[in-house]
Length: 316
Image (cartoon, rainbow, N blue to C red; front, top):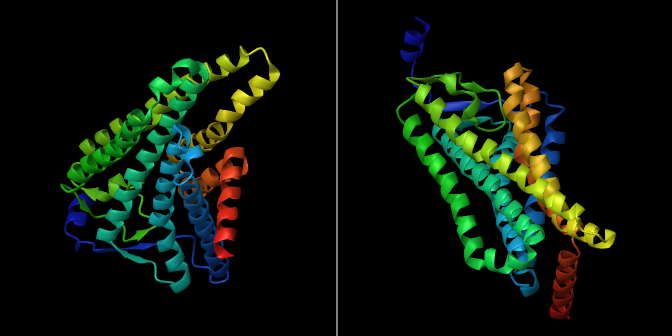
């Protein structure tokens, strides 16, 4: 009876993203906070790209992946934050259903591409530490290009599969969406029609892109740590660990965030808890990439110093 009533409703063409509440005293603070985060994420990731592309000393597989990851992070924060910042500034929280779909699809592509890029970086570190003599042969420019291409191909394939099945359904859920961006992954029950296949497809791709590569990453780092522990010199051991420590921190934060985002809804917490976890995954993770690879890396420091000297010489 309830299903029939939902199908007889007028088709929804516009949604209201509730965001982080209606308190007017909190809106200016949130606006400034997210604006600063957005500018910092953009500036930091753009800085990495600007440093890596022209500097031949950074034309290595690791920085090739880092630059591509920065490009993904720029697109990721630009998919979610401008809409949130705009709604906080104007108070207009409406978004068309079509634009909501577009935002969801772009976030799906980017999240899967990011996941596989992190895995490619893990493979790069594994070869560098566990098979250093064969590294140049196994991780050349062609292999790097293929790994990046497959990361995007998988993300786009996931989007195409979701789009095919979502086209057969109709959104008939609530007009008010208690989130700060369009995440239909947690609102599958809001679609009218047979959602069983959609859930199976989403589960299948999630297993591959999250659980599968997570296990691959864990296995790789077990081998990496075992190889590092076999190095007799403490200095060489610390040097080897430093080459993968930044990536290990990024991967740890990434998978902790992913696991929290997927597991938190299972315990049916207040909506604000899920939104905070999603905020950490979608907004704060992009800040980690430039912070870790810029502040903790001597080669990036040297490239930045050279770029500043060139800029100073150009101005004079």
